Length: 503
Image (tube, rainbow, N blue to C red; front, side, top):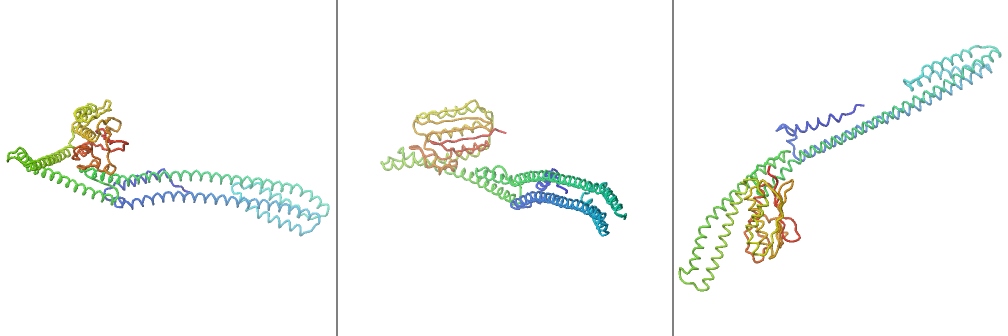
């Protein structure tokens, strides 16, 4: 029975699928949807495993048929040999009785039994096949003919007695030939049984190889289809992540099935739209901020003139009103300046000037620059850093460290401890900042890096911040290709920055 060759089928199928997938527009797979490709993959794998199972079933059925045929042949051969032996006994009995009784009917009975015995030799030889003992059958026929020749000689009682003595060695030889035929038929059946067992073992090995090959090929096809189908999904996920992080610089291209490519085109349209909106927002904020600075300066100047009594002395109530106007105008001025500073830093964050930077020295400089702030609150700042040099923009990364430290100082209670840890591994640079403040409320964790977002846990007695410090941290870290994380902490807040090695 012909068997499939899986060793050649696997690379051929994989190459064909790869060529069909990579063909620009003529490939059929590219015109299918994700669900259709997934269904095709399942059908192909099912067909492969089903074909292996069907081939195994056919092989087992073939062996079963051979075994059943061998059993039938063995039973038929045993019956033929037994029948020949029984006819020989009946022939001998008829011959002896004829010579004793001189009854012609007994001789005719011998002749009929002899004819039956000759007729049974052909099926016997056919059942034994190539192992048929032709010399034994020929000798058996010769001995039976010799016995018939003895029986054909009529005569008186003395002659029949002599003929009876002549039959004894002839039938003894016939019985011995029957025994030899039984032995050779048994050997023939044993050889046929051995052949069936050998065929069964061969089919078992072939089925094992076929099943294992089918499983391996199905696994390769599953991995191939999984790679082809899941890679576009990974691109979609990465594109959505970039859009969620306000990173609109790189174009979005998604391959794969038709519906995923269509989704990629929609994401690219969305990226362009969001980039245009972000540009419009930045331009609007810059313009409106500049427009507000001039009248705000006039308000502050007028308030200062009123407070100095240039327009005449003020009553206590008027002085309180002027003070409130001055404080609020000053707060509004600071918010406008923070807004402008955030827009400037956000615009410049992606323009990096990477240089080999001594990270412990940069960290020590940032801590020293804010020494008056954390010492005034009675805080302790611990720096954990070993020798480390990274290819980064030292100036912008200094802004990141300064904002993290300022945020920790602002929220730390008097006498608290701030820990800055620096580590460099195979993946890149890792910076941890931990404080002992109130921490970040669980409902604020998802938006803590959003610009101008004010959390619920504010530092007691401190001026409310602008909410742009951590946003600037995220912009600069993402420009370095890294990530910012707020990690769970039993006490205070734990921020971690991961920056990969520059490539």
